[in-house]
Amino acid sequence: MNASSLTLPPKALRAILVDDESLLRRDLRDRLKQHPEIVIVGEARNVQSAVELVAATRPEVIFLDVQMPPDNGFDLLPHLEGIDPLPAVVFVTAFDRYALRAFEVHALDYLTKPVHPDRLARTVAHLHRALSQPPAGAAASPALVPQLVSETPLEAADLVRLQDSGYVRIVRVDRIAAARSQGDYTCILAAGGKPVMIKSTLSHWEARLPVELFARISRSLLVNCQQIQHVSRLDREQTQVFFKDIPEPLTLSRLEVRRLRNFV
Figure 1 (cartoon, rainbow, N blue to C red):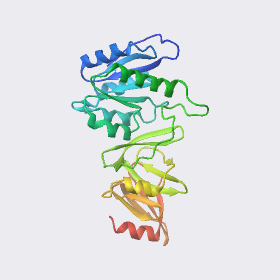
Figure 2 (figure 1 turned 30 degrees about the vertical axis):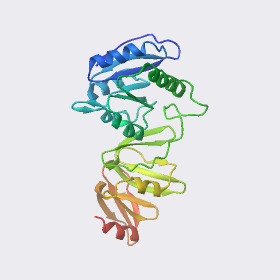
Figure 3 (figure 1 turned 90 degrees about the vertical axis):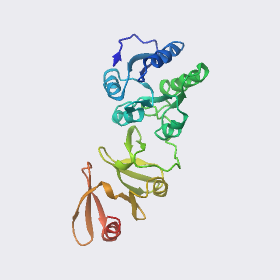
Figure 4 (figure 1 turned 90 degrees about the horizontal axis):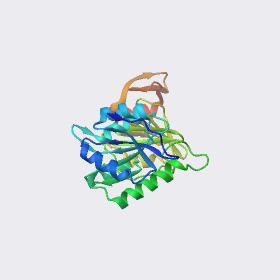
């Protein structure tokens, strides 16, 4: 981990570079010198050192490699949960095949190596617009536009970004315990954090979440059976379902419990 103490130009964005190859970090650092809107405040060579560097420098931007054996750049994202404001992530990799997954987790941009100067200039302009001049009333977060509703099916190990106003979580799909419809919104319960209200339908989530994990037990509820810890019957009509690493249980009707038993 390498962090530096700098006096930043006005409106400059603090950025870190995360890549296991020092020559590639140096190349990107040299290219970014042409853009005074970005100031590099540290470098890391793997996920663990990047976690420490983020805590030490609180960057606004992370230029993140994907393949850093034995690490994977996507593994850094859950460690960013709870940071306010959440850093913008720009993936920098030699492999085009990661582009779809990068945008699934709402990376701000995706660069392929070797980074072309014109393409980098567009990325820097995008960063500056998104982070330096948030619209009135927007939360202090790089997610300044409404969360886009993707139709791409998710797998258990995929990461998904959950955003509710200024609160942002990045979680593995298999850590989602339940999704409950609430009008035009869906409430997502996931291990390790509070519920998140997403403006999308439950049918949208049913189409995207892995069928081997999630069971629809009523018109308004999807449940990840593998996240169930135990159940507790309240009375003849109601039963509480407790999930792993989620303090508050869900209360199910007798019909919902009957349907749930068909999947567990």
